[in-house]
Amino acid sequence: MIEVEIVGVRIELPSNQPLVLLKEIHGERHVPIWIGTPEASAIALAQQGWCRRAP
Image (cartoon, rainbow, N blue to C red):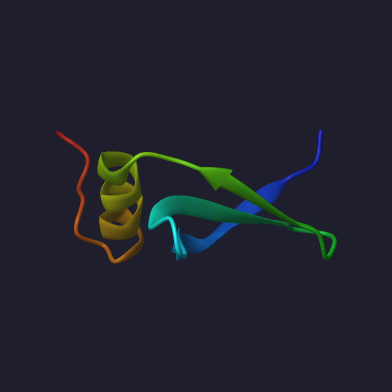
């Protein structure tokens, strides 16, 4: 397995399809994964610190 980290959520143009961009932790390769709008919003909010875990 190769460890990756989330670079961020992007919008692919001109289709306006959201994707999450992953990058190898110990490498230079990037992997785009196309996702739905609700998933993109949730990931973006979590990266900004807006989401908390339930107690």
